[in-house]
Every structure is written in C-alpha cells, then in structure tokens.
Image (cartoon, rainbow, N blue to C red):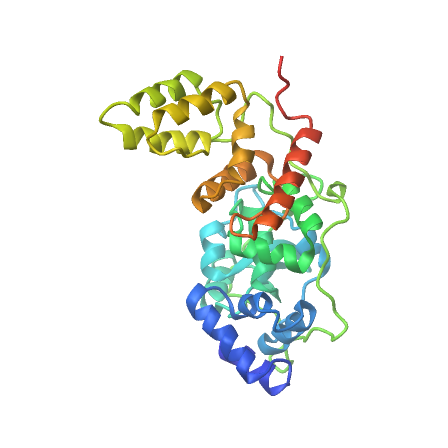
Length: 357
C-alpha cells in the first residue's frame, strides 16, 4: 500500500516527485512507515497527510477520543484479549474500544489485512478499522501495551503534537492503561460464524475521511486522562535502585588493579561520568559527589560529551520520571541544555527529589 500512498500524493500534487524520492530513500535507510519519513522531512502537513492516508487506504480517521483516551479491551470474562503487544507490532494495529458491536482498531499503513482478518475470525467479532499515522499508533500502543515509543517516533510526536502536550501524555501513560470498571469495554461474546474484518456492505465503498477533519489533539491537562497511581518513594522503577556507595568506592579501588577497564565500565554505568582508568580523577570526583542523590548524577549525565552516556542517562530518567520534556541525547547542545533544565526543574517541583539532611 506504500506505493499507492506515494502515487496518490504525487499525482494529487501534494508532494513533488523529488521530495517523495527523498522520503522513500530515508524510509529505506531508517525503516518505519512512509508517512513517518514524510513528516520527518516536513514534506507535508500531518493533517493533510492523514486525509490522504484515508483516501489511499479507504479507511476513516478515528474520533479524537480514540487517540486521546484509548480504552483497554478485555474478553467478557475479564481475561486479556489475545490481541497483545507482539500482535500489535505484527499487525500494525491497536484495539482501543467497542462500538455498535464492533471492536475499534487503529491501524497504520500499509495495512496488514491477513493478520486483521485472521484475528477477527478467531475472536468472532467484527473489526471497525481506522487509519492513523505511525507516530500516533506508537503513542497509543505505549498507552495500551506499555511498549515505549522509539526515540525517533517520540521526537516526531513532540514535533507534530507539541512538546508540552507530549510531556503530559508521557506522564499519564508511563504505565499501561488499566481496565477501569467504570470505563472499561468488553468484547462481545464470540460468534459461531466467520466475520468480516471491516463490516461494510459489499456494494458500498469504505468511508473516506472528510477534508475538514483534523488530527486529534492531546488533552489540555493530565486530569482528562486516567492517570496511574504514583509509585511509592520506597519502590523506584527497575534499574534505578539506590546505589550502594561502598560498591562505587570499591570499583575506584579496582582501577589500580588488572581489572581496571572492567571497573571503569561499571563506574560509567553507575555514575554517568567517565575519567578513563585514572583512579585519582575518579577519587577527586567521588570526594565531591558521594553524598549526591544518584538522580543528580543522571541529570549531570545528560550534559556529558559522550552521546552514549547522554543516551543511557536519558533512558533511566524517563523510566524514573515518566516524563518527556523535549530532551534527546543527539539534539544540538543548546536544545539539550534547555530541555535538561526543564527536566530538572520539573523533578524538584514534583517533590520527589530527596531532601538532604
């Protein structure tokens, strides 16, 4: 279906042939959907692209609520659907609700019809399919299945939806959507016969999104989402347990021995600093920072000259804070520093920072 989308955009004069070739070359190098490459290169506005996706696939755009407030669907007995995270990746689709007897599914392009038809037959429930750009599908997949958005799509999400709304979205959905007895949706009882994946009359053409449709906007405030309960301070996310300070001191001592490189690697992973195997430099740093909370080391790591240290610091901080503030390790230095400052301010204003005695 990618060729159909590209042909549609070029023939309709939405994108020039040269721009399309550049986007397709980018897709070949970095992977992902063609719509992602087009948005990354600013070849087309997201609203217009979304409308053209609808024309190319014959699927409508979803109501904004399906993207803004996705609901985790379950079987009538409360058990989890077989449409899980791996299926979502494979089918490029996410179930988000039930309406008029059909399971509502957000789909990316190109459509994986065999997977969708087979899943509909297995469940015995008709599917109502909607088209969304890959970046929107990834955001909803994170909310439903706790499958973090790749950094590439997270950066693009901030560009098309705005850094501040995306930050709130990340806070709200740093844990997967849970089944809510008041809002939860149940799949219909299984039927005996096979059911078409898209319930339409054989003589009817699939609905096409109106040209006036606009992409859903993210909520104005976290209050409009079902927020997960805050994690207790005594139970930090996996991988962020308090560091045993004696272990750091021991590793610095190991720098004087034959396992210096191994000790250095462990010190870098813990402290987000890198002084090579120069024990005296490590000792000097340790004398100044051994009483710091480790989260301060992580924030310091965001400004390190080594991109790998910046990336690992970013990854741990996202797990800890559940926030996205526009920081990414490979941004220009000025943008990184601005985002780091916002992240630190947000952390201390949240009240979760350790109070020194």
